[in-house]
Each structure stands twice: as C-alpha cells, then as structure tokens.
Image (cartoon, rainbow, N blue to C red; front, side, top):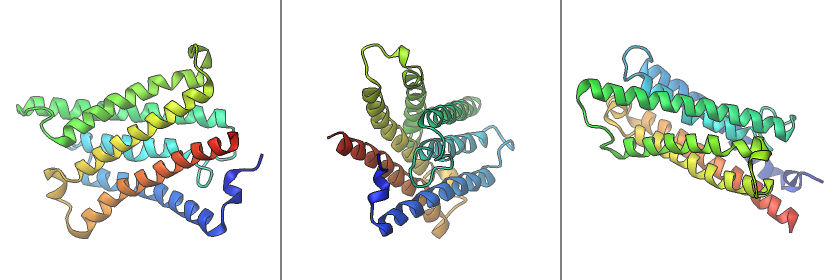
Amino acid sequence: MANPSESEPGIYNFGKVASGILTHVFCVVFTLFVTVLSKPGTSLFSWHPFLMTLAFSFFMTEAVLLFSPHCSPIRKLSHKTKGRIHWILQCFCASCATLGLASIIYNKHLNGKPHFTSWHGLVGLGTVCVVGVQCLAALPLIYHSLAKGWSLAQLKRYHAASGIVTYLLGSASLLLGTCTLWFTSTVGGHTWYLAALCPAFSSLVIMNQVSNTYMAKKRLVS
C-alpha cells in the first residue's frame, strides 16, 4: 500500500519536511539554550530548568518525531522497533521530569517557600504525573498480552489522543517557564520571543503530525 505522503503535492510535502527538520533544530537549540542559562550543578535550583527542558523539549519531542514519515531519523526501521525506542525516550522524559520536580520541591523546602503557587508549578506538576501515567499505559502496546478486551488499534488511538494532551501540557509548562522571574530577568527582547517560539512551534508540528497520521489511517480503512 502506498504511503499517503507520497500522494501529497510536492510543495506541501516539502513544507512538512522543512517543519519537521526545524522542530528537531528548535528542540535541540532550546534545550542547549536553557542548559547554558541554568548552568546545571551550580545550585540545586539549576537542575530544575535543565532537567525539565531536557524532558519536555528534547526527549518528548524526539520520541514523537520518531514516527514522522517526513523527518524521522530512523524512518527505515520497523514500526515495532520505533515503538520500543519511543517508549525508552519517554521513560527518559519521565525520569528527567521527576528529578526536575524533586529538585524544585526540595529547593523550596530548604528556602521555606510555598509549593505550587503559580500556573507554571501547577501545570508542571500535572504534566509530570500525566507523563508517568502515559508511560505505564503504553506497556500494553508493547506487550499486547496485557491488554485484555482491547484491540491494538483501539489502544493506539487512545494512546495517540492522550499523547497529544501530554505533549501540549509539556509545551505549556515550558512556555510558562519562559514567563517566570528567573527566565525574564535574564532573557528579554527578541531573544525571549525566539525562546518562546521553540515550544510553541514544536507543539503545532507535533499536533499536525499525530492528527494527520490517524486521519490518513481512517481514510484508508474507510
């Protein structure tokens, strides 16, 4: 069966390839930018922005882009292999996010500051919890014997839908992080807009990729 992307107009296909490559670049550049800005290891707090950005900007984005028909770095591998690598990257994401959350909680505890008093903190906490649940819920996709009474197609649809929500929460957490006092006191002007553009652009590309993939499958089935 022909790949649906092969029937797309050339300019449209080129746009998807370009946006996918740009997403790879954005997630790496944004992660490196925050790493330089936070200087991980210089303080307990420094681990929070570094680990959260590594989790939501790099690992989570690259995990989803593995399935892109236009810009996947492992597009020639089987879907099963991609699925396992995707799950491993998401586990790295969950691990980094958990450590990043733990570092800010302990840092606030040491400094006697209240916890989760901002939208950034609340959305970040929710995202870490959802990422953990998403990783556990993906196990039946890898070991289908765990999914009793569910078809593989149903599991994939639910996983994709919840995955979009999870990714949007992660992007929202990053965007809210660029609005914190720590970030805005160092980054301003055009640099701030470019930094905020990275998670915003990536979320649009990821939503488009996932929705188009399952819309294409629905058209082929019907």
